[in-house]
Length: 535
Image (cartoon, rainbow, N blue to C red; front, top):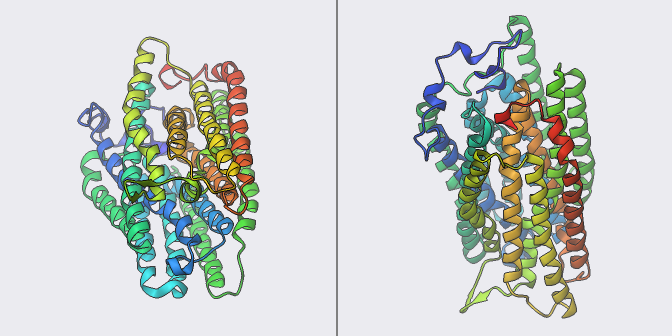
């Protein structure tokens, strides 16, 4: 459902709303999927296979690009390889902001998801086929594939989450539970993806592993194409439209001009880089991108506050989103060290041999989605149970707990890193250090991420909900970028950097958790005018 067409908000002047469509209770009121709307099952499985492809590919990237040419890799310096992964993952989430805007104003949520899934599939196919061209010529389709995945995910990711929120017009703990189930689907895909592509990529062939991720995305595209109409009905079909046809036409021209200009710019930069006309420095790009993304967030929130025509209550709720955004960015900056710093730690400093079998380094990242799968239903039940007894935690309280638990996870890694340093890098530490770290990070994630997704849909002004969802993913983009920038600090040639990295990360998380605890009461006051079911 487009944000300007909410069936549970009074129509805004100058807009067309979905109140003109058939009654949506058939789609939002049924409980055919574990007590939730059947449409959740379509979104669950589409997102599951998309996350299979994304998380299946991502941890292979830094290992593949930093592997020597003799071992089938590109032989990149690990600092550069890690920065490339950070930039790629950052853009995957960063594109959610224009992706939400394009869906709101031009495509509609449902069509944006379909186009996004098709682009992601094309990107994975391009990466998989790059192995047929050799290490030199193969770089062009390899990096072109990454760009296609970025563009497609920008269209799919914010809009599929927005539709999940639209399945629960009543809001409240049931919507939180729905997002927890949806989040479990994400992690089923992540678990399967990292196990399958990790084994194929590390033990068989890099490109076979990456190609398997593409097959998964094709499955997700097929599921969505066959089931969306049957289970979601008219939800998300119509983009926001102004009542004045002239203004509507102008808005559409603006979006089309932006999309065309953006695509031309990407093609031009890619062509210059591919032909060697310009040389790109990934580490330098990542640093400047960090500042640019912070400026982007500040500019967006300033625009919404000044020119968004918000009521007083809406400004308070957007203020809460600003606070949650800042602390979410801190959390993801630590958490997204998994595909870079922690992945390299698993490969270089962890004893991975069990009974003669060497565990692929990427498999350790499967601990996180496995923990989510096990504990997500428990947390969904916990939030609903607490709400029924009047003791549900507020969103900032859950965020603070998530930051603290992630801090415990990185505190564990300080001891593991010190053990490596004490041996001069000669000792491979027990895999249980990583398992324990991922356990606490995962529990922290459950306290923060699904709650954050739900908070964006229930705190956002309805006409900005997809764009606010894009801002939520901008916090993840910042986290991925910073995680990529520090990934090179896990290096056998620079052992002393590891304890410093994990110590800084731990302190940042703990301090952030403490500050947010102090802000719980002020934030609850800012949310006091939010309907009880949406707090």
